[in-house]
Image (cartoon, rainbow, N blue to C red; front, side, top):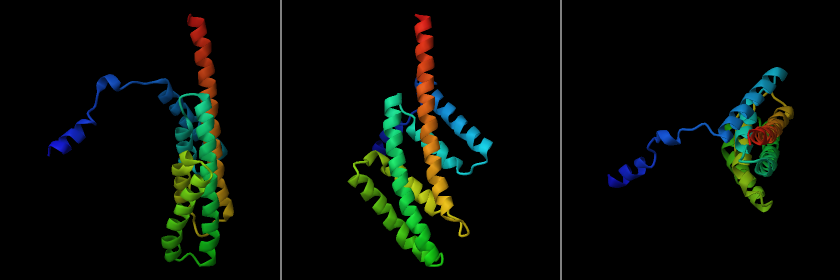
Length: 179
């Protein structure tokens, strides 16, 4: 019981730590812009675009570019394996056993490929992309569906990087004027 109490105390709400910081603001702006852009163009796949923007937005521009690149590589790997799954699933007439057997195999291959490419930071995003795509492909969709999901990753990374660059530039401008 003491261990459980100690464990739960780690998650005690601290009002002093409830702050709106610059990274949180930039994250909100990036999500807003992804939602707006996808709505404006009538694109689907908001979850991948917004999640990618949140994951890619880091403390500064350089870290955002590094993580965004890693995420694009990881998602492309996951997308590649989801394309193979799409083709295989169609050839085998969309039987549940295909999903049951091959989604875990392609999950492992996505992890192994990212590790082999020295892209460990892209593993979670790559596996997430693989699972979102493979487990949501409608039977009557084409390979275009898979490519669209991968493209949403690029949009999320681009927006996160742009927001990080522009907000950092604005902060520098205002900081210089204030001093």
